[in-house]
Length: 336
Image (cartoon, rainbow, N blue to C red; front, side, top):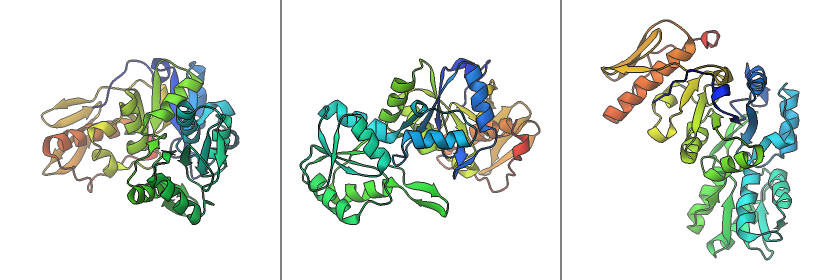
């Protein structure tokens, strides 16, 4: 369940690995309190890395966007699944290896920076690497699929099934990965979260002995931290809602929980469990007849902590998620 700390996370950990969409911005717009929290964490000598499964944009482009939002960011602060994929390829194949590339400019730049040579789907190659690319042609996907089935080694930047866009949630690179898997019968080496390569690459590039993964997605950010054996902070400014939170399995549960990035700057209280109830300071949450209920008053962050622990305890005990239809979430102004 959730851990407690006597000191702020920004003092307990020396590296914050921040997911981007849903944590620092949403659909390109800044998340409330994010820029100020990042600045304050850096004042505590905490390194900050911006970690993204998006393989289409270059780190320079991402850093420029962050600066437009008021977040101090250099190109070296951004680590992408494209860079992690290029590391995986380079470690196995060595510099100068020819690699079929299906993806966008971010993936191409990363592959070239690693000393590899991107080539077309008909060219001689030692591997194929794939990433999200809106302009990838279906004929190239078909040719790559056949080559993968015939034995060409395959590295995928990530397996995200969806991506946020200005027109709504759209299919992500994971949809293409699943298509290629079903056709070829081959599973790729995956570089992005929740697999290890991206977070390992982040620590390698940015440094830090006590990293903390910060994200909004249970199945990539938080599970990725679990795979790495490091602690994590879940923020609720992105895709994880109340229903999703109480359904989290053990490997998807964060070490810490806060409504937004201000959770980096705080100590985290203990959530006490007794007779099926979870209590966090002024809030008491309990599942009765399958429905999760909450009583009390206090900070919104503590409401979420009590609810999460009560929901997870019920899920572990019964195998069934608690109902949340009757709960009214605290307003954002109560987040602290």
